[in-house]
Length: 224
Image 1: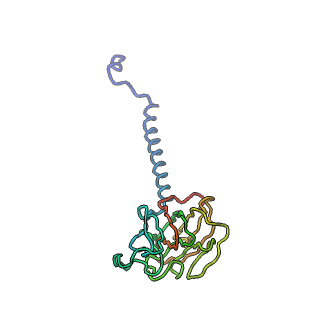
Image 2: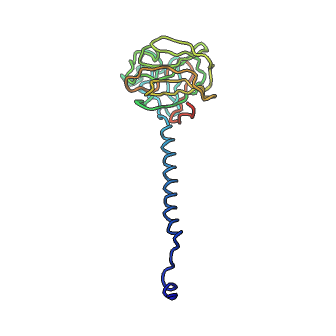
Image 3: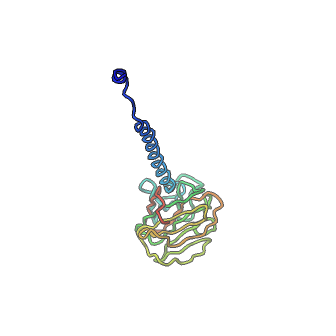
C-alpha cells in the first residue's frame, strides 16, 4: 500500500484545496476593486473639448491645438473667412466643440493679459448675432473693470470674494441646473448661478483683450 502511494501522485492536502479557490477569489476581488476605482475616476472625469474655429468671431484666433483663444484688435478680414452660419458675426465669442446633456463637469481657464472677458455655457443654438450673457439662453461669469459679475439676460450682479486670479474653474451640474465659479487656489465655489437648461449646452467664451487658455478633461475636484 505504501508503494502504491509512493509511485502515484502525491495527495493534495485539504488546506491547499481550499487555498486555490481563495486565491482566485482574492484576485477577482482585487480586479473588481481596480475596475471600480477606474469607473469612479471616469465618473469624476469631465468632458474634454476644444474650441470650435467655425464659431469664432473674426477678431479671435485659436492657438495651442484649439484650446486657447486670443483677441486681435484688427482680427481676420471677414472676406478671407469661409462663409459659415455657425460663426459669431457681431461679438467676439467662440464656443466649444462638445455639447453637454447630463452629468457634472469641470474645466479651468487660464487668463493671460485679459481684463475683460466672459466664461460660461450657452445653448448650442444660441443666436450668432448675440453675445453670451446678453440673452436668457446663456449663463456666464464676466470680468470687467477689475470686478467679477454674474450675467444673464444682460443683467449683471457683482460677485465678492475673488480678485483676478491667473486661473479659475467652472463646475457645471446639468441635472441640478447649476453653474459655479471656482477659486482654483482654494478649490472652493465662489458663486453659483441657478440655470434653466432646456437642451444641450456648450462651454462658451468671449473676450475683448488678451488670451484665454482652456483646460478640460479634468476630474471634478473632491469636495465640490
